[in-house]
Length: 72
Image (cartoon, rainbow, N blue to C red; front, side, top):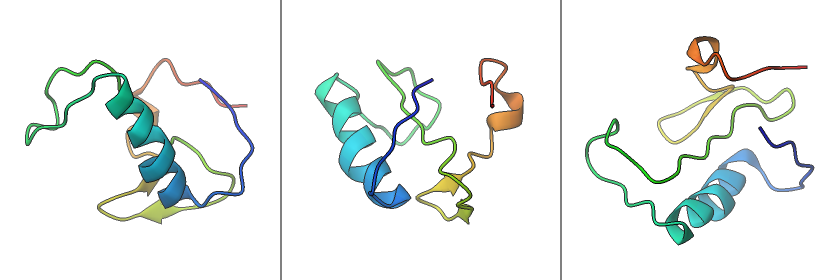
């Protein structure tokens, strides 16, 4: 897990930063959302922001099922 401080909005952080990093590291998206991937970066929390849109769910809906996530 990485914690960063930014002035970017959550959608911009996800699209312009995280997706760019994924692409540069070889991730290729397909119609199958459960397909194998080289890397998967998620925006899990963003301060107190709550968003539930098709493009951004924050906090991420799957957080309770991810044993490797630890919140302070």
